[in-house]
Length: 344
Image 1: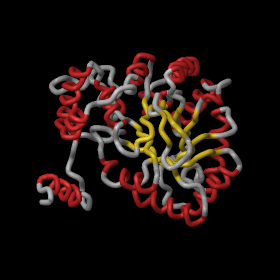
Image 2: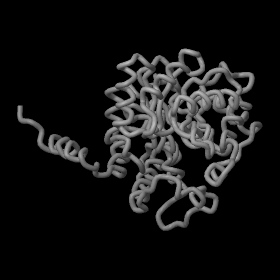
Image 3: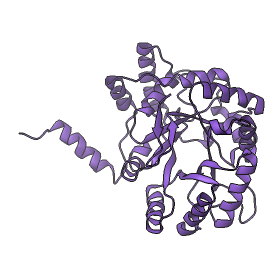
Image 4: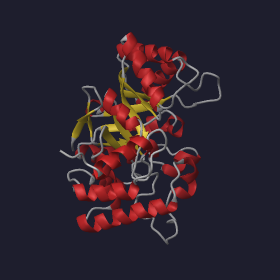
């Protein structure tokens, strides 16, 4: 397993990390993802640790806390061998302070996560969404208190826009509070919006990407192809409405390119899709998920080798989209420069 620094921090994380969204299995969304119990989770963690994967990601909202509880049971007795990443901000109840990133909410959410996980510290706490109703100074000063208390080691965000993340980083710099070193983002061959603004920001500010749903919400498993019905066992039957949309023809063109490269390399479609991500700038770790041992072992096969530059170019061409304003003028300038090199 390759280890990479998490953004501009000293923490080294594996190139692949494990998403525990399938643990617990409660509710319409997470129940469709999976219902892994503590015994099954422990077996999956055994396989991960044998492969050198030691970062496990969850969130309080995953199965209403059950994911954290199952993960906590699975790591019992080996806390020193794992890194734990969790998230908070999304609603965990109907009360006025059961959502958001206020001081009271962050302190309570951290204490609740520590209890469910059965640990006294969290390696990476991420804000699951931007709370526009709470001043960033209140959010960051609270995170500073939690870091100084030893309850959190590092802080990050998830699903922020560029201005939201930059505002937070600027406030942290101004007051000497902990900077966000990670941004958990959606990024895949069928969803490359991250590249337009958030990737350049990550490069400039030292924020590493933790990639969620690298297989495009289950669309790049190798089982979805042009002219074939959606497989009976696909979770997309129950969860497609919750995930990022993608046009059918664009998906099929990307799958065609993946299929061709799979035949050349002997690798699976998911392995190729994940390996492509591992070669992108700012990516610190790609979060893989698995409902069973077979899926996990296949995803772990995405490391230890690299696509060629020519294969990467083919996947780039199949998946590229015109960037929205104000980004497309820069892309056009880059294309013009390539076609019209300066005369020396």
